[in-house]
Image (tube, rainbow, N blue to C red; front, side):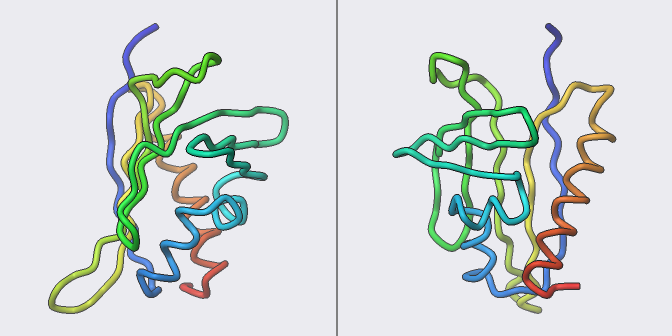
Length: 130
């Protein structure tokens, strides 16, 4: 299988970093916009979309700032791929944005970006940042 490429997208979001963090770091927050359902057991999160299920390990988090989920295989071993959600606050303007770091196959980056745009749009509607 060919390698996936890393890509980053930044989304301006009209929200406090504290509120935004709740939606990117908790199973209940993530299940409102990221996946149909999200369960966690310890450091492992299960993301459910329709009939598909993916497992990831909460690899790192910095309260109020960022979370990083590393995808795991069927034996719960880390793969080389992850996604990271990083809250950025402009020092001067205090504008808040969400930086998404993810991986996709080279020919699927546009499609993956579109998917993130739709999911972040759902998140913005959820927190009233439209």
